[in-house]
Amino acid sequence: MAREKRPQHRHNFKAGSMNALIRVSSVISNAPIILNLDCDMYANNTDAIREALCFFMDEERGHETAYVQFPQNFNNITPNDLYFNSCTVINEVEMKGLDGAGNGTTLYCGTGCFHRRESLCGRMYSEDYKPKLTDERTEMKRSERTVVELEEAAKAVANCSYEEGTPWGKEMGVMYGCSVEDIVTGITIQCRGWKSIYYNPRRKAFIGVAPNTLELCLVQFKRWSEGLFQIFLSKYCPFTLGHGKIKVGAQMAYSFYLVWASLSLPTLFYVIVPPLFLLRGIPLFPEVSLSSLWFLPFIYAVLARSVSSMAEALGCGLTVWSWWNAQRMLLFRRTSAFVFALVDAVLAELGLSQTGFAVTAKTVTPDVQARYEKEVMEFGSSSVMFTLIATLGVLNLFCLIGGLMRVGLVYGLLGLGRFMVQFVVAGAVVSLNLPVYKALFIRHDRGCLPMSVMFKSVVFASTGCVNYV
Image 1: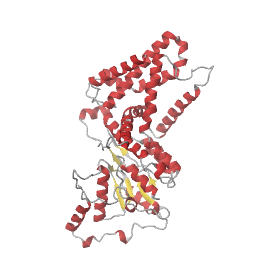
Image 2: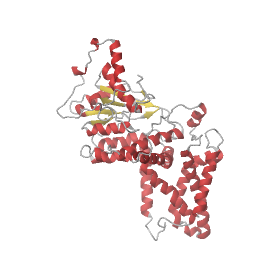
Image 3: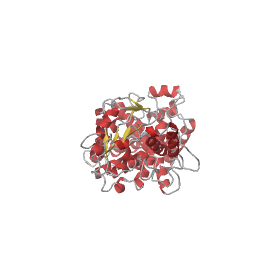
Image 4: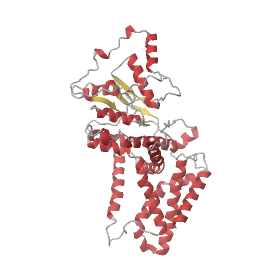
């Protein structure tokens, strides 16, 4: 279906397309269950529809189920998940935990989801109302309409001005006003009293294509994290909209994702301040020494977080290198995509900018695909996000080398304990940035970082080091 679009009417991107499809399908069939699937995904499990219907038709809880969400899976993930796209830990651990924390408050992910039409179209849940999927009222009298009449009726509801003065996008259908309309829609449905189901069968139900360049991954997460943070700042925040409607555990679990963008602030602090203080010879953390155990809480926090995340990854069938790539991508996202997402979200909240919708392209050239299959990280552009990543990587490299020289000359080996935590922080950042250094100084293929990025990153990092020292 191609809906009508005109410059003077807001089309609301994917959410507007979804609502137009909902209305057109109601004219043609008015089926009680709707499957929402992205255009780059395909069905991989012939039992998925039957299994989803089992939840809706359950005699005890089926009437309270608004949607059944299947996890997102992809068919082009490398053996060690170079860009941390597989979502395996999210699917196997986090989504199950969210579903259990709220007793039926699964995230609506925007694809791979079976919806009850009534709940999606704004109906409030009532314990007294127990619809049956076989009710005669859901049957359309198609015999009374000709094909031409159906076509005209479908055109009318797909008209660009149809939604004017209606509750579409506000109280019914997919919600407007946010680039991650799926999350807002799921929260709104659950606050009407409906429950949701997260179902992860052994055989993957739906499979799609993941981005296979670093820039595409960062652009995608920039859009997601910006939209999620806008939800946190809006009337749709789970703590306000969901107060008294969904469990506190579910509100907190939702907010875990909504504040992604704000994670850029502490991450930037740890990749900038400790290395610079190391370069200047100022200890920030307690000395690692048997005579003082104040360093143990810091060591415990680092080890607990690292060991638990590795255990989750290995428990989900991932490799150690997959876990390491995940740590690298978490660093890159938080120091680039999340930074710009936070700035744009705050500016949009202040009315100084307007939220856009960046479509993630999935087509690449053969040489890019070949490097991706070899798990060689793809840069290949002078994106401002790459400049920021490279600058922080070079800054930590300079600070680590300069810090080792300063501590060695001034304090000797006895001074290592005073700066041990800062050495570990800078060393970890340098280790995670090894692909960046290769792209800056060693590689010469089309996937390397341009000379302009190398020049700017070295100049910015050197300026920061010189000014601080």
